[in-house]
Image (cartoon, rainbow, N blue to C red):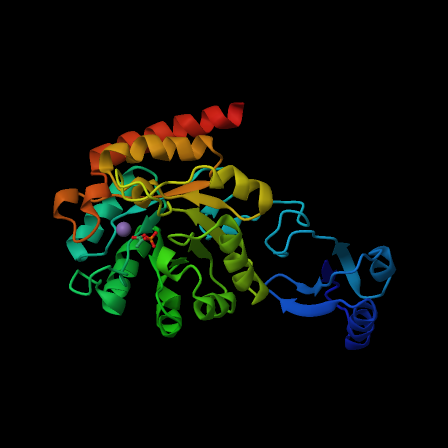
Length: 336
Ligand code: PEP
Ligand code: MN
């Protein structure tokens, strides 16, 4: 059960609600977000929610049968829209494009990518400065200095930044230089990181774990929301299966299922999803048709020279074709 409290609900009223819930064997978890105050009540007994709903201090009350509550679609009338400022929104009925290299490599590379994105109307650039790598000997990113450079060059062209945060201690120093914090697949269930990102007022793109289920992804998002941050996007980036013909198995099934279960925007990542440049385009288009609200895709001027993930990265020409086709595809979907 989700109880939305009135903004002027006083402590006696809240106490009375808590008592009424306790009397019915429900545990009330107080949640305060950027937008409002809630009580998320967990309990097993069947109760008539009207008996709670009549109490003072309550703006709205909803029964949510899912085990995750705040991220469930069952209580929120409207889907979540992430507003990044300067007219850049995700989940608002426009298809969001986040594109850029796997890793931020240097000033020239960022300048060139910013130019490419700006001339194609792409408003959000991706690029890792802290890179989770399977081998400790691989390129692990330019770190905070790289992020500052990335931010300086992007803000000059009003391009927004999405980049991965790997640990709690990085959040504070990164905060002023990012527009979206990305939680990578390997950190999808790093509950300390999720808790900490719940406390910041900045959007989070949460990737599905390498072998994470849809429920686990939703529960991970619930960690962030229940700690106070409502600005969450979920990302399908492929899961590990027995199949070896491609890097990961992009689970397109997850997209309509997530759209049905949550009010949060759903983003598709075909680059990591299939891991093969040649097939990024069809999988991106399939992701749109499956219902995604946006895409995150790897693009580099010279993918063969990229410091990481070159094999799944589009060059500018390929990316331009994809941007065009995605527009058509999205228009077609919306016209149905
Ligand atoms: C990335 O976006 O470059 C990345 C490392 O993604 P994932 O966490 O999905 O592997
Ligand atoms: Mn990558």
